[in-house]
Length: 307
Image (cartoon, rainbow, N blue to C red; front, side, top):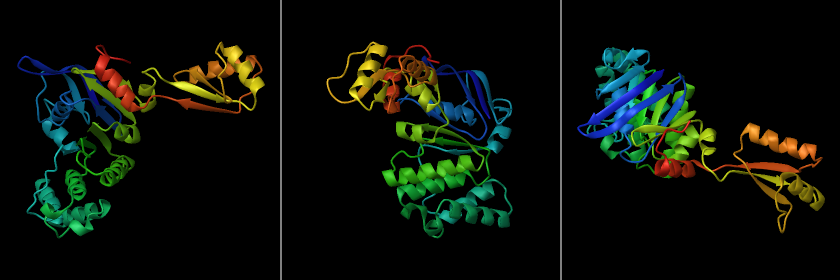
């Protein structure tokens, strides 16, 4: 649904994007992570036709963002970092304004507004000025406004910034609902837990380049610290496993922590070694670094893309 090859953008001598590649399949949630100033918002602005790229092949919903901007705009909905609702208008009036901008017939506009107010649990906001709504309700209204035209692709630029934990989790449910309804969601965020919870695939942007790209589990295996905890029913099994794996026997307990990345290949090799040594285990638990560890490691030290 989104295809980017060699995207470059600079402002004067400052290079923001130094040739990034992205692929986002239909119906998925894609998260773009990166520290402040990494170029996340610039990437969204280019994909949504608001900023012209310096170089690269960029197609959104099958259309070239430079030569077919109107076709791209017809296929997308965009929610920026800050709510763009009109505080003087009610929730329903904000939605009707968007319906008018999409040239929907009046009756169809009212139907679509009522539908979105229900879907986003905004019935109480229908007759209230947007300025009187809570931050979470304004954010939900903002996203609802971006969906009036029933877009195939939804861009959400840091949609939960400034929200309290309860409102943030409600927004997560909203995003999951968009994907379940068939929309493709392109999400930028600085909340690592958010990407872990929502995204089918994650890319980390740093220094103008994509330094890592994969599922949350794949990214977690990029940094050291992972291990497999083996639990045994007795000391004989523990000692036999330690001998087979060439590891020291722990001073206490019936568990053994074996370094590993948690991959299927790593687990298969571990279990084969134990099986050949006729060692039975009672339980096995895989521990991997979280996305915070991945983010800090990649944005602090990575100079070249990691695949």
